[in-house]
Image (cartoon, rainbow, N blue to C red; front, side, top):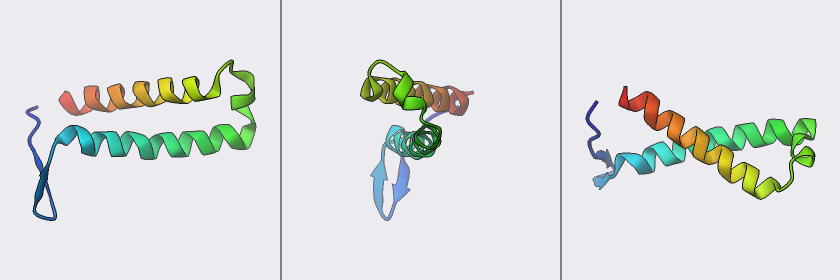
Length: 67
């Protein structure tokens, strides 16, 4: 698939910015689940874990969209 610019209220936006926003929304949902069950207490560095999770989600979405 070819990535093309997205027209957002008359402004052309790079497709990666839309994908990054989608990954951020998925991350928010996953963080709420992790906070509800107390899963972030069991990791060494919670902020680093959340950042790595965001990168995994972002790369997965890019991979899915590209195919």
